[in-house]
Each structure stands twice: as C-alpha cells, then as structure tokens.
Image (tube, rainbow, N blue to C red):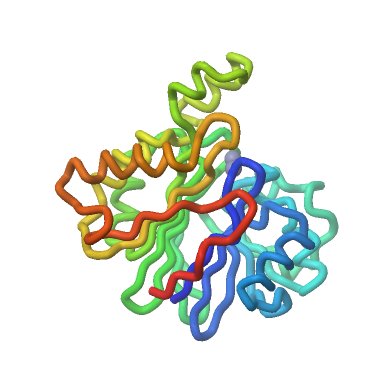
Length: 262
Ligand SMILES: [Zn+2]
Ligand SMILES: [Zn+2]
C-alpha cells in the first residue's frame, strides 16, 4: 500500500492511498485544479482516482469534491448526516456517485477494507478511517478535540498514522484569535494539540518502524518544528528512539509529503 499526504493543514486536507487495484482520496479540501496539480506532482493522473472518502463537512475537507466527482465521474463516500450537511455545497452529483456508509460500519472495496469510527469535532458526524490492505493498516485521525479509548483501540497496530497535531496550546492561548474561537479549538469538539497528539501516540506506538505523520498544523497557532519536537519528546519518554524505532514526519499545508511504501 502507498500513502501520500497531498497536503494537510487548516487551509485544506487531501490524503492519497494506493493499492494494486485502487486509488483513493481521503477528503478533497482544495480546489479541483489544486488537487489535480498535487496528484500530477506524484505522477498520478487524476482521472485514475476510484473514489473519495469524506471525514466531515468542513470546507477544508470537501472543497474540491463536487468538481472532481463531476469531472472524473468519481463516487463519494460519506455517512448520511454528513451528506445532508453537505447538501448545496457540492453542486449536482450523479445519484450513483453518492455512496452512504454508517459510522462504525466496516466495508470492503476491491483490495481495501475500511473501518470508520466517530471522532469528536464540531461537525454533524465526523469520522476517522482505518484502511487495511492485506496485513497493512493505515489510520487517519484528524479534526478531533480529543482521542478517547475507543479511538485509540481503533487506530492501534497501524503501520502508518496520520494524526492531527493542530496547535501549541500556549501559542493558541496567547495568540490573536478571538476568545470564542480559542475556546472552540481547545474544546473536546475542537482540534488536537501537539501535546495531545504526542500522548495518543505514546499509548499506541510499538516502535516497530511505524510511520507517523503529523497533520492539520495551524498556520497561526503552531510551528512545524515545535509540533515535531513536542511530539518527539513525548514519544521518546517511553524509551522509543525517534530515529531508530519509528519514522516521524510532518505533513505540509502547501505541498505533498513523500510517497510512503508500506
Ligand atoms: Zn473540521
Ligand atoms: Zn479540518
């Protein structure tokens, strides 16, 4: 299985997963044109995308979905409440491209198995994804105010984690955002701090060369190196060596990561 974060951040999110038989996107939160450019930059023709999965209805996750679905006849998968709240945002889609799953349901598409789980965010029914191909597992957990035990159980035993590391708590508190917005981000239905991402990872990582990608970094309330070092220090407190035992990398708001071969 291959994975590439095409870009991730508060301004847009789009992740790419490839197997022998499938090419999928998780979220498409940029313009269609931008996603085409990002895919082309890793050598993927946008017309070869088989389907797009939606985590939740916020614009930084769905901006390009309508245009890509119409342009390349791509089916879109989301739960029912998310479909209802996206109504009017995506433009007209073909009926057969509207695919509905139930949160918590497991389903299979060609050589991929999917499991979805609820996250805690100010959206109608936000989800994270676990994606399995043979014995390889990828977990994607962004846009969640906290990670409860159920979420930890779901994502455990992955070979690649994309986890939100949205903000530094001190930078957010001292920054220029209005207080209600600060409260929203800090709440259980907001976004994960660097520290919370580190604590979650500390509990699930085994030090067996898992890939960890920090996602959804805030432009205003975080610094990539600060996110990296905060998470690194927390993980290393368990005795895991960040260079030897795991692969810890950042994602970028305006460019792709490398393509990880799992
Ligand atoms: Zn969101
Ligand atoms: Zn988001």
